[in-house]
Structure formats: C-alpha cells, structure tokens
Amino acid sequence: MNVPVFIDISLEEQAEELRAWMKQRGADISEERSEVGLEEDLQKIISVCHVAFTDTSEADVEGILNGIVSMLALCSGDRTEALILAFCEKLSKAPSHEMALVCLKVLWSLFQSLAEASGTRFEVYYYLVGIAGRTHQLGTVYKDMAATTKMFAKAPLTTEQRQRLYRLLHEVLLANQRPDQAGKVMVDLLGTYTTENASQAKEEAQRCIVASLADPSTFLYDHLLNLKPVKFLEGQLIHDLLKVFVFEKLEVYNKFYETNKTFVEGLGLKHEDNVRKMKLLSFMQLAENRSEISFEEIQHSIQIEEDEVEEFLIDVIKTNLVRAKIAQGENMVHVSSTMHRTFGTDDWQQLHKLLTQWKGNIHTVKEQMQHVASAQVDLMHKKI
Image (cartoon, rainbow, N blue to C red; front, side):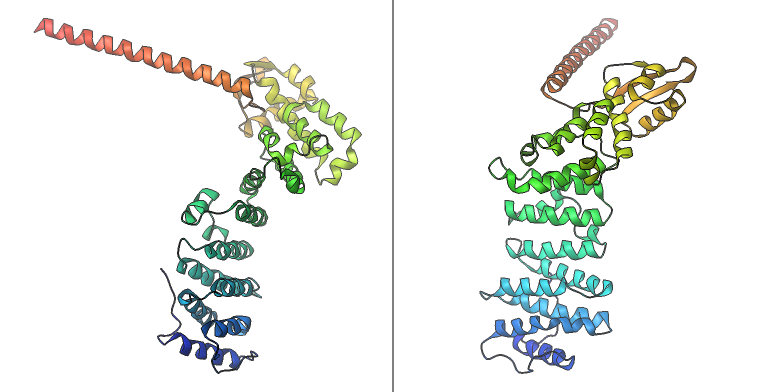
C-alpha cells in the first residue's frame, strides 16, 4: 500500500493540525477536535478542504490533501466510504489546471492506498478519469478497458459501474482527441444492454451511429447492427441511414439524402463527407471479387468525372481498405485485396473453408517433407 503521511503523530493530533491550518486560511471550522470521534473530524475537515486551493504553493496544497488521504486510508469506520466520496467530489472541483493536476496525484495516492478488493476503489477511479480527462492526462490512468478491468480483478465491476465508466470515458476520450477509442468505448457501452433494457440506451445508440458515420477513418459498420440498442431503432430514419452505409451504394445514399435532407443535416453530418465516404464504400463493394476494374467502370459506378478517377483511386488506396495498383497506360486498376463491408454467415463459412483447405495443404506438405527426409536418410545408409 502507498499511504502518504501528513506528519508522524496520532490521527487525532493530525486532525487538530489540519483544523488549525484550514482555520488560518479562513475556513469555517474550529481548531478543537470533535468529541464524537475521528469520522466527525474528517467530515468537517473535508467539508472545508477546498480552502487549500487558495494557497499559492502547490507543494503545500499537495501535502495538506495527502494528509487527509493518510487519515482516510487508516480510517475503518462505517462512514469511511461516504467520506472518501465527499473528498473526491471536493477535489473534482479544483479551480485551476495546476490545482487539478495536484488533485490528480492526490487521488491516485488514495486509489493505491485502498485494498484491491474494496468496492470504493471504483468510485475513486471514476473521479480520477474525470480529472485526468479535464487536465489532458488521461494516459496516466487509462490505457484501455482490458487494462482497467485487470485493475479491478478482485472487485469486478458491475454492469452499472461499467456503463457509468463507459459514458465518462467516451466523453473524455473525445475531449482528448481520441475518437477511435471513444467509438470503441461507445460500442462496448451499447454491448452491455440486453433486449429487455435496450430502450434505455436509445439516445446513446443514435449518438454512436452518428459519431461512427462522422468519423473520417471509420468505414465498417455492420457490427453496429448487432447491438441490442441499435436494433431497437429499427424502423427509424437513423437506422435506415446506417443500413445505407452498411449495404448500399452511392446512388441509394443520394436518394435517401434528397428525401431526408433536413434529418441528415440535423444530425450534424456533412453531406459532402457522406458522399466521399459512400464513394469509397461503393468502390470497396465493386472490388470485392474483382482483380481488374477499368477506369470507365469506376467513373460510372462512383459517379465521378474522367479526370477525377486517378485522384479518387489514390484516395482509396490511402485508406488501406483496398490494396491495388493503378495501371495508367491501360486505364485499369489491378486489385490484390479488399476489405469486406459486411462479414456475415456466408463469409465466415467461406473463411472456415479456406482455413480448412490451408490446414490440409500444410499437412500434405509436412507428409511430403517427411517422405523426402526419410528417403535421404535411406540413401545415406546405403552409401555407408
């Protein structure tokens, strides 16, 4: 355990020191310790600990707050959890970036001081993520959900706790310019809902769809259709729009936009960006089972001018969705591989078939090599 120590005196004497220090800074608190007990002292100290933020020395502020941490870590009364939550709430309202950074370090010490099986650790971590996001220090407390889950191995997070954390992470990841991770977290959040409670996440499902469509680096959406809250949106325009991006080509999107222009723009989506993405998706679909495609076919399928084809193909190749080479002299593009827009049951069966064939081929090669090796050994014995 990593428990900071304010001063090497008893908890009661430490409470008196803290009371006196805070009273000198103008806090509405008496210097005398409470007759009720240590928990009462801590409650009063925490209620006015925000006066520490007015001190000019960050080191002094950190020392004072760590003093409260050391008392909380050694406190074992019934009110300890409530006191910790009150302390976290105070620190989450640090008035400046510098003080918020101090609070981040203090809360991390508090988190480490708590037993790994303590349910209170989640609440402290929740505040940690909030402050880390606010100070753009999220990397200090969050790597990914796998690492976070491991941190709580002895006190596994409940579904409700996961949902709270996913919502907060989505918000701070976006604020910290990490949209890819934010999208993954939102998908994880929607995955925690069942058919029975999917309706509770209707707004979050719509935000997830809109964010995914707006993300310029996201092109595959079929996994969203399997999420229970997204299925709950079936029959609504947002679900219809998602299906266009999953299955359809550019002309279908253009018809949808003409009919629902106000709706699309109301989502905050830009028509020009949607068209660009649909052109790329349409080409992916065109190239799925093709090794060669003419410039003329691309021009008509993607609805672009003849002099725009090469620039479009360069744009496609940059996305890494399709691997291809442009043959300018032939007015052709040679496709070596492409990602599939959807990956359904038939695709899994095809993959299983290919892997089974590959396994069989490897087995045959192994047998042949063993036969060659045995023949070589026999030949060597005959020579001897």
